[in-house]
Image (cartoon, rainbow, N blue to C red):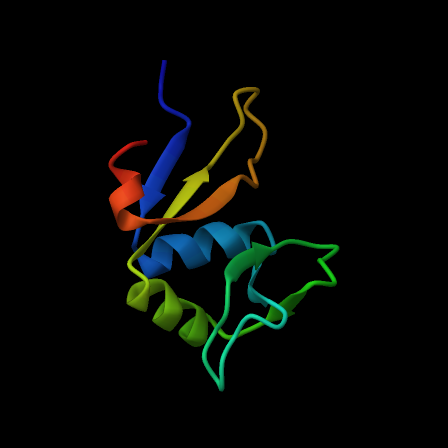
Length: 96
């Protein structure tokens, strides 16, 4: 059986995956400091009131500075489009 979850640090892969699902780069409101991105998330319609949209540039700057890895699925086990994603620290990605 093929493993459903994948990991990547490739900006183009992450952006294409999110945009194919109408996802936007966001931060949790109130978590950023003086122009820096806070806690990162990918938000999907209809949207979450606790999330604030940011630019992909700002998203990836924080992503790289924090040594994050994007854990995601393309499809569910039933073959449907999956929205599952999680940002994890690079050292944790070896455990997946």
